[in-house]
Image (cartoon, rainbow, N blue to C red; front, side):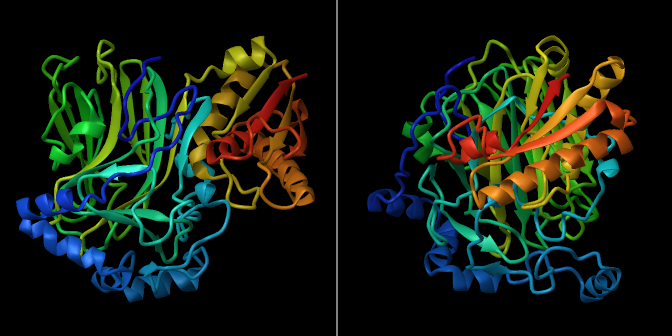
Length: 459
């Protein structure tokens, strides 16, 4: 486990106290605007408030009217409010946003549709960011940037989003450690009709001298950096029918000749799959990147074990047209290498936060497939083992309702293991504890995420 500074980085053990952003220095703002007059126009538009922004991106996530009518007739729109009036809204959703499915996305696929999705999140959630503590219109208090941005809500989706301003770097200051095994998940959206000529949204994992000191000099992360990788995503390739991804190693290159690679990604096209879930999985030197259920990269030598990675953040190289925007939400960072077999068979107990459910529901989200498959494999290879499946919730809501929900979720897991993975249901018992046995204090988002778990006890 290595300590690090921050930008998209995660808090290890212990989680560092949150710092406030420092972007309100008038001198710095003037200097930045003098450097880039083009950016100033966008900054001024953002400063005028959300109404002017809404006018520029009012067609966000809007599909063609005919397409929506067809889906409406088939009952496929899903979610509250549908997408027909998609745009930015100033309403703030309630609790459960960090587990919420985007409206219209929860029905995009069944559990089986993720049959090639082998992503397994880390054992312990150490950082969750859903912007619930931030007011709409403000830059999030736990982040820093050398550009501009603000917390927004998007009609037809749950929770809050961070709108990324033009040409800059954005990172959370509360993350300061990045081990050799971790997973990073977040939701990514863009405005519809996104220009092919606008820049990629880059997720950067790097070794940086001092991000808090040097970030004001960066534009698209061209400033002070040493070693690291860049994972770039764009919602449109030249043909406009697919998205585009690139992978780039800078500084010390562990793969020798591998410096950059680029490919089309069918999972990220603005009219078909927006927003999308991004999942990044590091296991020592190995890197996997997924867009929804599509595995974009599986590179065995992407990370350099000698590099002290201390920085994860977003970089935006600039928008070709003012209406183009990227949005991120629901960041989740977990640490530790999964070891289901050892924990369940040897230790007799395995607990996971990787089986996800729709809000206030026992419906299992399809991105839980990798975890369920891993558990099913262990049970299949150990055919005499019987387990009790126990559901747990956080403390939000009514205690009695949480207890009932935890029991229903355990039953859903039992059904999925039996129906979708062929595990004999007679080997599986279920129970639920609700909020009665928390694994972590419920006072933080990270604690609540660790308490929303499914436990497997060997009988």
